[in-house]
Length: 305
Image 1: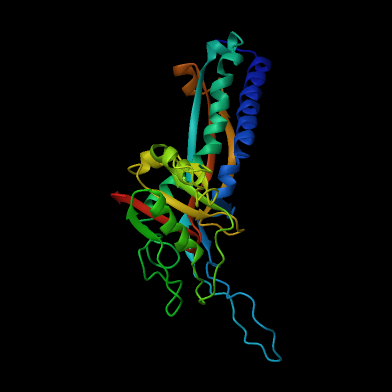
Image 2 (image 1 turned 90 degrees about the horizontal axis):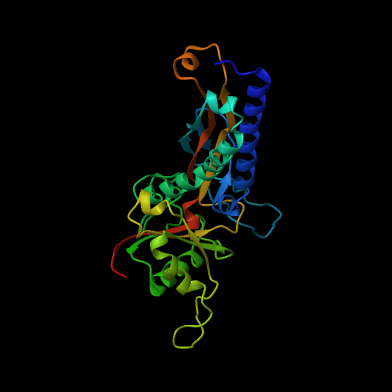
């Protein structure tokens, strides 16, 4: 089949522009930027060497005590991610770009939303995987930034309820940094749940009045964030409280190679001769890892509320 180079180039540009525009639109989703900080480090691995608590301000004296930032390293590997779109040559010959436009848009949207899937995986795996402290990201007690630092705990096992939310919220509000100073958390808290607990979460923090007519003491203490992938990565019973009102966040998103749309439109290659297909691919390299566990509280939800 002979397709004019002009027609093929126009179709190729149409797919790339459509997918890229959809990616850029979806990437502006506030949820992605709220839950994770961006690091954009290059290389096979990204290492955060500054993960240690600052002591806070102190009175300036004639001879000040110099307290440096503790540099505790945490490394996570960057991985390549891709999704492909295959188009029959005959459809290009017949000018069927409009037919493929929704699929091209989803190619871009999938690329933009993929970090949320990785975010859910990281939260679920936080009960078993370690962070910069050398302990699991979520730990019941005794978690320290380094030997001699003030310890903390950020894990429970009970299902979401108003009382358990209050316990977790109080835990965050009382959190101290490694030097024993208040972290003053609660600036902006996300209550992260699976769709199973969406209405439970909203009944806890989104209703101004209780069923009895009394004021809800937890009204607007947190923003409900529903991650559908929690029900796939875990059981769906897990829930989390994340402080997202600071420049540093509990999780980070690294983008080694930004999302791009690649294409194979070679009509002289063996693949085309055998299949008469053209291929477009959404591709990027990156990963999601753990930032500061001090800013998080998580429950496995395995026990009754």
